[in-house]
Length: 295
Picture 1 (cartoon, rainbow, N blue to C red):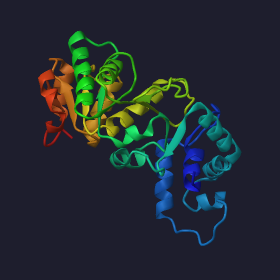
Picture 2 (tube, one colour; picture 1 turned 60 degrees about the vertical axis):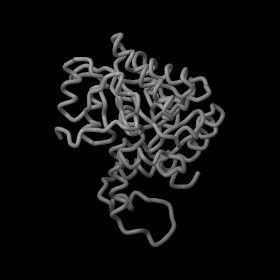
Picture 3 (cartoon, helix red, strand yellow; picture 1 turned 45 degrees about the vertical axis):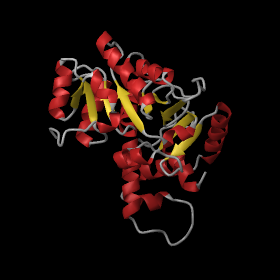
Picture 4 (tube, helix red, strand yellow; picture 1 turned 135 degrees about the vertical axis):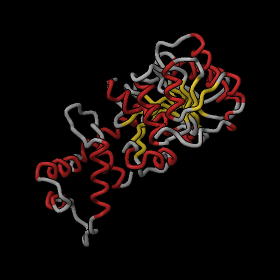
């Protein structure tokens, strides 16, 4: 890994220590902006708190950043542990980091994604699917159709591996001979390496599930897909709703929702999503988003 890639890991990952407090995505973005606007140093030396204070940081934050960057022994230990577990890091600067996602999310893209599985899957065309865990029969059928059509039409399916819509679509895709990217909110290293499946996890490979991690990974799912399909969601609540609304607002990827007659889907249509029936999935490449949304 390059020094800059190591820097991303040191600043943005817990490195297996639950008591370690790395920078948040917002703090990483702020640091990147400050560094980009600063004069470049004339000499090659270690970063000092004084350098960060010159960028407008207070003493406490300056010392925190320098301390994080100094934990190189823990980084090497964590990288070696990840290698033994079959987990590899892709920092925002790494070759193989999803360029489309970095472009769509900008500095809000994850500083690092840990991966387990066939990395070449990331190089292929992708569509994403999100939806509720408690899913109705007709919505489940839509999720399965999206997964199967992804495989048959040459797309990798991106989803969150959660119970309900996610796993229904993923299973249908794999059964039809396709490939799947699972963006996890729990421990990456506990997954079983499976043919045609690539597992991704933001920040670390050994963090347990949390609601915050589940919420954060939604932007990754939406931004990895060329198009995003919503099988079911509840109006105004839940990760499928909030992630989809944010996608429409930020214009990460065109959104297509199952026409199930629900208030949630009607509201998403008003914001800019397109409503679909199962028959509309026969040619995914032809699907077009609305010219403009509510935002």
